[in-house]
Length: 317
Image 1 (spheres, rainbow, N blue to C red):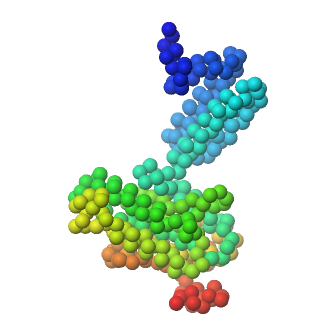
Image 2 (cartoon, rainbow, N blue to C red):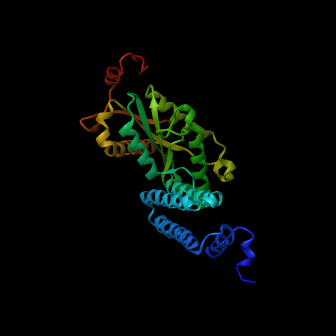
Image 3 (spheres, rainbow, N blue to C red):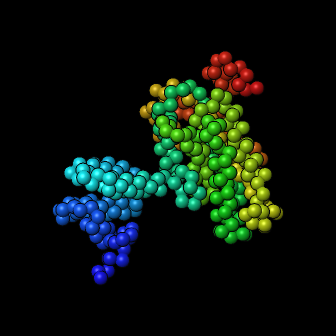
């Protein structure tokens, strides 16, 4: 019996198994089998290269190109439509899964920093409502000490737990960090790298609301029973340092052409506030208020906040 016969009755596991399965089950002409296998080979070859290069644009181009080829083949093989459709859907899902992996941090499953910046830039370029948004950076206080004293395995568990608490406390039902446009809202918080995280709050009526959310997260970390992760953490519970920059959105035409520059500036300011908090071992959120002026971020005084938000005289109470 040929070597491939042991797998022909079940799911194919290799490229050779798949080719025999196509020949045995689809009833295609030899040239059609060759065309289909050629397309499948092209998918795997190009996906392997793209996985190494992490090029989102290439993945999107492949998805569109493969879908077009499969649609043509389905038209030619209408009598086999259901089977060909299932194959097409499998590879479309493969493309979607690979694309998702390029957007996520493998350890925490949070958005990676590159994707976070793309979403922040898009928001700044398109958002037209004249309210506040906020960008926050988070750092695990004294994280190196945990790694050195307790080991990297405990350090990894601390990172994963802080990421979980960030997800729980920055919730979509609070209008926190919703991806736009369209679709089901998704939380937009990310792992910046190492023991640092970032988050975005896209729509706030008052800038103080950002402080409320940041404090809720910070306190959740402090209240957590860290002995669940390791009994030795009882003597040194985990804390986080948080810096938040609130931006008065103003008019979209002031932001559209410089969204990338503004996104980077917001991250830099939040980073400075976070390290100010770290340096002073603060037990509260460090928060700043800015607006766009002359293409740059400018500080906002209480007087300026009231002037730019008519009808909200109690904004700073």
